[in-house]
Amino acid sequence: MDRIEQVKKYELTTESKDYFGHKLFRIRALISFKFVAKGELGGFVESEKNVSHSGNAWVYGNARVYGNAQVCGDAQVSGDAWVCGNAKIKISTDYFTVGPIGSRSGFITFTKSNMSAVTGCFYGTIAKFTAAVKKTHGTNEHAKNYLALVKMVKSMWKQDGKAAK
Image 1 (cartoon, one colour):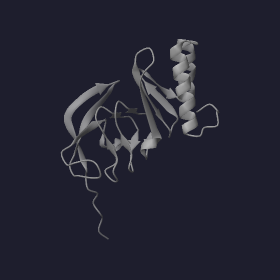
Image 2: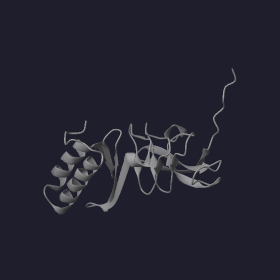
Image 3: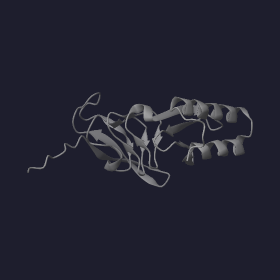
Image 4: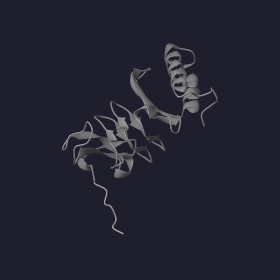
């Protein structure tokens, strides 16, 4: 039986950036698909394992995907999103990025598959993020904003209020 060869839809370019100990490469579309034109530059990934060559998955602009994270199906990651760890983004609603927010006026990305948060040098579960916010900010305005955001994300993803693991 003949093996069906999967079409490679993007390549890693030589443009790279070091990001928290990970070397990330900008991607370039080799074919046109959905909303992406052949030759279009995308965001940054650590390796081809991070974005599926099948479906319409794509990483745009300054978004970064690294570690064991995967973007697949029809998911599109964009803006200043950071998708990392063991996160798996199958559809665009599997992650949520907000910013600028907090004392650094930075961006924070939440990923549904592993209920994690990443911002600045923090990466961990939403429960650990909540604890770090309370420890760092106490009850100030930054804490109130971060905690309201966590409540909203959990509500969006229909969490029952139990601590994320």
